Amino acid sequence: MALNTSPEAPIPVGQVSRLIGGWIDRLGAVWVEGQITQLSRRPGAGVVFLTLRDPSHDISLSVTCYRAVFDQVADVVSEGARVVVHAKPEWYAPRGSLSLRAAEIKPVGVGELLARLEQLKKSLAAEGLFAADRKRPLPFLPQLIGLVCGRASAAERDVLENARHRWPAVRFEVRNVPVQGVHAVPGVVAAIEELDAAPDVDVIIVARGGGSVEDLLPFSDEQLVRTVAACRTPLVSAIGHEPDSPLLDLVADLRASTPTDAAKRVVPDVGEELARVGQLRERALRCVTAHLDREERGLAAARARPCMERPQRMVDEREQQISALADRGRRTLGHLLDRADSELAHTRARVVALSPAATLRRGYAVLQHADGSVVRAAGEVTPEEELRARVAEGEFTVRAIATPPAVTPPA
Image (cartoon, rainbow, N blue to C red; front, side):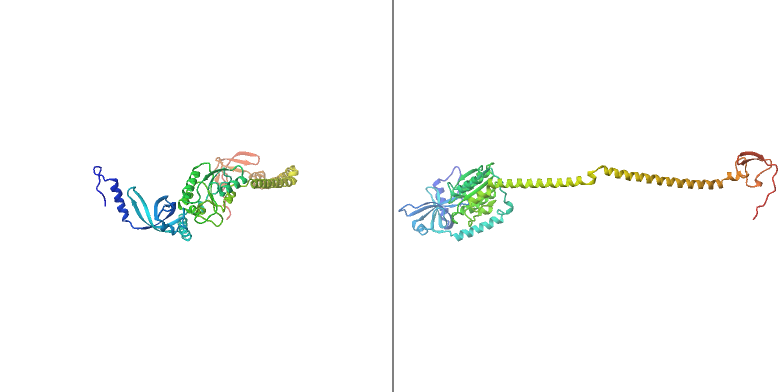
């Protein structure tokens, strides 16, 4: 129920605290799941204090319970364990603090943890966080490697020693964080984000030795998985040994079976690379030598051809062909001229034979009127008309004295 308050009519802090307590008291008992941190069991004390934390959201609540309630699970529950608590919220008015009064504590079993991890795995896979096309290739020779691992751990030693044995010039940026327990997730997430933001870091390795399912739970945390999925720098997961498979292995760009394997996968071996370079040089030399030998043989074969051995031979052959063609052309042209001359002579003889001049040489003459028209009939001539007579050796003028009688041509 809302209170009627104003700047002129406020209510005291104690009343607000009591009202909050009244509202919380009306809440019933609830089942709460979380991870135990800051467990306090004082000798002789009848009450056990602990903190229940949600690793995914980094939220904690204080929990109190009677020693008899906690002693029932004391052998299987310790700091870092996941439990389910049946508790009632309580409000401590003098301090204004909220806590849970536990009536029953149940440890979360391995089978239940694995079932929840499988459910989370399916949910993240449906979002595409494990897709193969999101995987980024590792650089061939990283100049600076970010390493996230436990302080003075065997995983750190394995990665550093094997990497420097393979390539002595490689450099590391090491971040020592808790890799187990309640502080593991925020520590690993912060280290990954810091290394990812560094511009000189080429690849990040998250390494840890083997352990139980509970020990490796931080590396299946949803917050850590999403942080790795958003990472711009290629990341290698080297958690545990071959049977271990936290969700970090699925979202990472490369999964290494062990920290030693991670060093071998990230850093090339200088000896192997030198041997490979030597092999490539020998292969290149063989290829170049074979190419030169092949070209030399081709050049020798080309030089051995007659046209290359005696180049003027082609000119001589062409000269002979041109001479033969010129002779053939001259003969053909001569034949054509001779035949044309013969045909012309025959034509001239026919023309001469049929020419009027030949007729005139035989004593005939051609009479023409003054207008040049030829006289073909005696009736065309009038008395005293002057006609022009053409003979073989010239022409002269004649005059008609009388017109002869008309002659009827034969039918």
